[in-house]
Length: 97
Image (cartoon, rainbow, N blue to C red; front, side, top):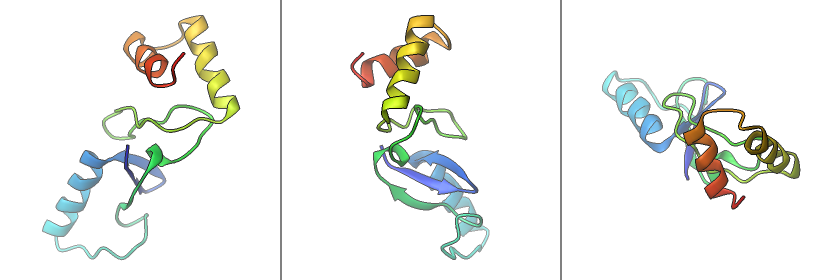
């Protein structure tokens, strides 16, 4: 899934596009600084990480690749049933566990 980086957060395409549209409507300049406007889109759900990434605005799963530690994190969460059941099911399916 493609994502935007904005103010040290990851945003899904829908949320990132909405922020950009609002900023453009307000006449704000897209200056290439992720503190001021969303940058991207970037592929791979924001890239490899130690845990599954979710949009910081709407919480949609960004389907990022995981490090070995990340895979262990997901396995432990699934084994312990630690978290929202729907989210765990989505992780389980996506990561093939």
